[in-house]
Structure formats: structure tokens, C-alpha cells
Image (cartoon, rainbow, N blue to C red; front, side):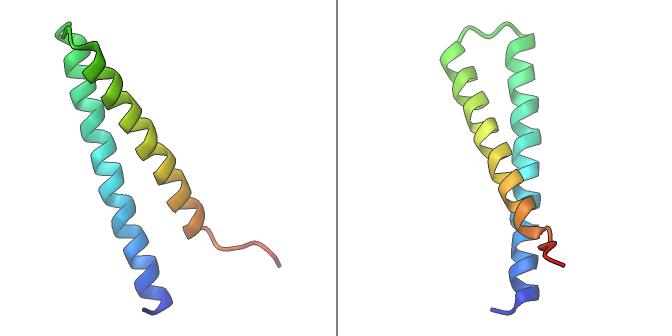
Length: 69
């Protein structure tokens, strides 16, 4: 796989993760606003959202060119 294909794959993965992160935010806010009583579910969703945020940061750092100039 070429470097440009690798970068494109990273960009695609990054966009998917950002979408999932936004979707989780909507679901969590809805559950909290509706005073949903399944706190374990809300905690699992928040934990997943944090994992996704970490993955997003990791992918973004891979896309930043090295500054060894």
C-alpha cells in the first residue's frame, strides 16, 4: 500500500471515529436529559466516547508530519 493510500485510510478512519463520537454525544445527552435511570449504560457510553477521543488524537498525531527539520 502506498503512503497516500495509508494516509487516505487514516483520514477515513478518523472521519468514522469523529462521526461515532458525535453520535455517542447525542445519545448520552438524550439519556441524561430524559433522566434515564440506566446509569451503567450511560457510563459505558461515556467510557466508549473517551476511548474514541483517544483514538482520534492518536490518528491525528500520525497524520501530522514529523518536524525534524
